[in-house]
Image (cartoon, rainbow, N blue to C red):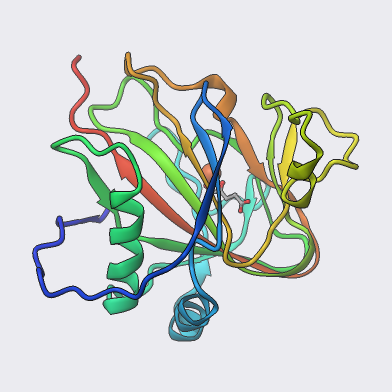
Length: 226
Ligand SMILES: O=C(O)CCC(=O)C(=O)O
Ligand SMILES: [Fe+2]
C-alpha cells in the first residue's frame, strides 16, 4: 500500500470545482457528490494513465493474486501531479478528518466489456491495525451500459429525484448507483467503534458494453486500538 504524505506544498493552487453533495444515508454515512471532478481533470487522468493499466489483483489473506472470477478490470496508479494533488486535497478537506489519518495513493480502475468487481468490502476488518475508513469512488469515464455500483443492503429512498443517480428500474435488491462521469460516491466503511459498516458491501456490476473508468480515493484510519 502506498500512502501519500499530507500536503506540505502551501503554494498548491487548485481550481474551484463547484460540486454538490447530497446525503444519501446517515447510518452508514453515504454521500452522493455530483461534479466532484471536472471534464478536464477526468480527461487528464485518463490520457496520462493510458499506458499504465495492468490486470487488477484481489487481496486475500496472505495471497494477493489475479482472480478473474472475482474481479475483471485493469488498474493504474496515476502520476502524483498537480491535478492528482488537487483531487486529493478536495477529498481530504471534504470529509471528517482526524489527526493520524492518511490517504492511499489514488488508483484508477478500468472495466471493459464483461469487466466487473464482485461484492466486497473495501475495508480489511478488525484484525488489521489500520483500515480504509472511507471510500470516495469517482466515475471518470462512463461511456458504457451496465457497470453500476451495487449495494445490496442499502434501500432506495422514496424521493424520486434520486432516480437520476440510482437505477430505480432495477429488480435487484438494494441500490445501484449509475456510472455518471464526473460524479462520485463517498461512504464510510468503519464505524466509530472500529467495526465495519455491514451495509457498505458493494460490487462494480458487469459492464455490458463500452468502458467504465473509476478513481478510488481511500482514506485510512489512524491505528486501531487493539
Ligand atoms: O467500479 C465500481 O463500481 C466499484 C469499484 C470498487 O468497488 C473498488 O474498486 O473497490
Ligand atoms: Fe470497492
